Image (cartoon, rainbow, N blue to C red):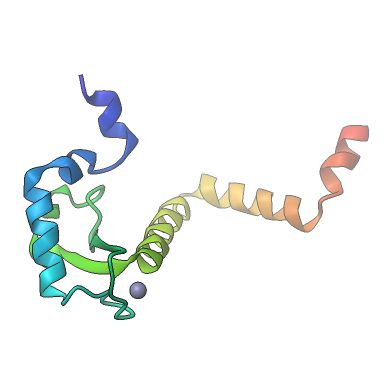
Length: 115
Ligand SMILES: [Zn+2]
């Protein structure tokens, strides 16, 4: 039980815990209820793990590893992290070159199909 759920989203069990809810509040209070990057205030603030739970599970409950971000900056950071992960490794690189060729020359796969 639980194994399939755990693989769905890194740290899902952390986010469900009471401990996290208290810690999230402490982080927002420390950051003055504002995004640390742009200073946006309001209800739509996320608490982000500076070092992701996926790679640093031991820092999941470390207040020093938390920062308050607005939804925009949080999703930007998450996107960057996912990109960094896919940019490593020769297979990924080959795939990226392949897809870039496809998008820069959209007629090519059609021509190959016709042959
Ligand atoms: Zn922001």
